[in-house]
Length: 324
Image 1 (cartoon, one colour):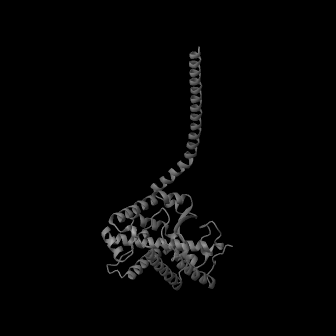
Image 2 (tube, rainbow, N blue to C red):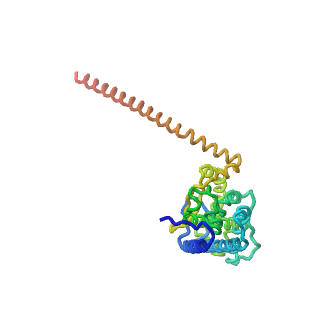
Image 3 (cartoon, rainbow, N blue to C red):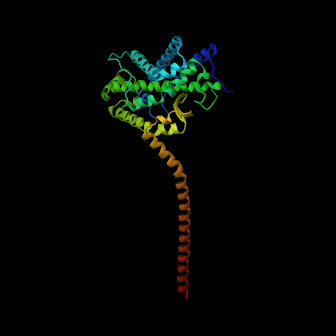
């Protein structure tokens, strides 16, 4: 039986939020290893450090919700301020994590610069990462735009809200480690920091492995921004991250992305155009190659068959001549 998220403010919503946060926190006890083919910045951390970071983010999100309620912000305020709210959540999560490590250095500030593809992705997807979730948690499902998801907003499954929460936590944790990387700058500083604070995953204990990991992430951010993101926008989907007993996994959910299409750059639109060409031509090319292969196979069989008959006749004639 599908259980639905409360559609308005009240005691029921408060209880569901508290229950959701408790359930999510319990999930942090699972193995938090990334089981996908897509790398995360948090892959650099060991399981214990991921647990601490995720817990820190969850606490900061609780405080954020209390602030929204105390300030009596409306859904319109959340929509207008969503990106700033997400940046603030990233910054406070980073500060709290750094404080927990007792890291004595200059304060690390949130990086919001367009030359970083990671920052561009955050800017382009901030509504999907945070806005819907905040509205679910503070106002109820009826305040979420009806056209956003494939189901009626009055009947939003609880599991859907839980997935959005896990997705936010993983995105924010990714941002925290990204900011750490960029603030420490050199590979030696990053490695020293990770080892000194006992955060490092055992497979990233050398400068070479760390350099390979960082370069892979940079390339992944570029390919996602220009190739993967336009494709999933065009398909009306969104990639989310979730936590289960096996570790961190990813899946796609259907969501309206019509508002994102006009915002795509020329290069991204070119990527979509190539997808259109692929969808149009690929089936025809496959069909042509299939027919061609059948024709070639028929010709080959025909030639081999005739050749075999010809050879048999020659051998037979030779044997007949010898007998004479």
